[in-house]
Image 1 (cartoon, rainbow, N blue to C red):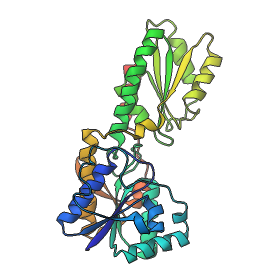
Image 2 (image 1 turned 45 degrees about the vertical axis):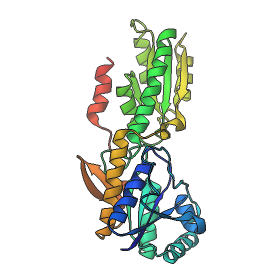
Image 3 (image 1 turned 60 degrees about the horizontal axis):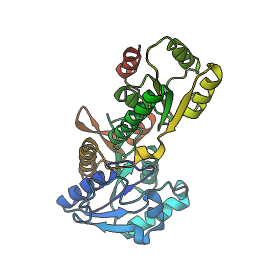
Image 4 (image 1 turned 180 degrees about the horizontal axis):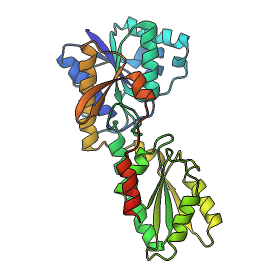
Length: 325
């Protein structure tokens, strides 16, 4: 293999640039040329200036930057046979023999379909703050997202304490509660409301009624955006109606969790996975994700990474209950 491409796709996550840097420098060390594809699958289809030769110098001074220098997108056109044919024509024209794709479920799904149609192999690196991919203990950006959330929770705690109020803090996690669970423990919050746990609002109503005689004057509840009852605003409105005199505030952290300089952990993780993805590709692997399990780079088939369920840690769930009784 003499020439490969690297791209980022889907939602951006802190550490993607570190992964790009590692992939490029690992390839060049092995005498392989690298082309960066701007805007993910969209750029692959459009071709032209979206195909950018990358050198070791090209990826200097990016390890500390959030976002992705290669930009990102979600391409509906790539979901069509016509779009994928355009993408293949552009890859062939540039002499691309393999791909390192950095992203999540949609990115890996597209890469596998593309290989089945055109035979260009891909190895992926898990770039998503949600930490919801099977086959890796942590995904690129998760650690940074937690730290961003906890920093906000620490600040919210000050005003919650000053005014004696309940705060509902909404974090990202449409289908997975990994951020919410970790932020609850690290931020010292009382309750985590998670998509994986299908319980109605009655439990939290009872929680607040039980706190009536408590000496603690404020509460912080972490709500994943995909919680069964709805986001933080929906939960707050329910409790304001059901508990006489209840007063709460809502903070939605939103996309700030995706931004910012990656933590040292995310920089190291991303570097390991970029390095691992290129080495796997050059060794003839395809349709697999490079993840880290027990601190060892491990390859997992795309189909498993996407479709197998990654469960929340039972001990962490138990800790939330124990620490806030």
